[in-house]
Length: 131
Image 1 (cartoon, one colour):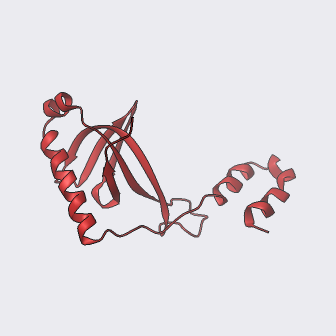
Image 2: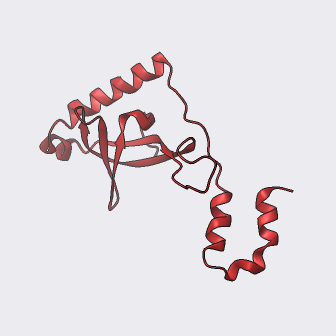
C-alpha cells in the first residue's frame, strides 16, 4: 500500500489543523535537478543572449514584447519532506520577457498579473509557446 493510500485511511483525523495539507504535500513527486550537457548549455546561453539583445532596456522590451515559455527547476522548500533542498519540481511559465540581467544572472518574465524572476542556473529550457 502506498504512503498516499495509507494517509487516506486516517481521513477521519482531517479535523486536525493542517492534516489535509500535510497529506497533499506527501503526494508531491520531487525529482533531481537535470544537469545540462555542453551542447544544451550552449544552446540555452545563445537563447538568453538573443533575448538580452531584444530586451536590453525597458523601451526595447516594451517594443518587442517577446513571448516565451521557460521550463525551470524549483527546489523543494518543505522542511518535513526528504527532498528538502535536495530535489524539486520542474515548472513552466509562459509570458513576456521584461529583462535579462547578465550581471545578476536572472531573467524576469511577466505572466498575466504575476512577475517571476528566474535564476539562469535554474532554467532547463526556453522555447516558443504554442498557440
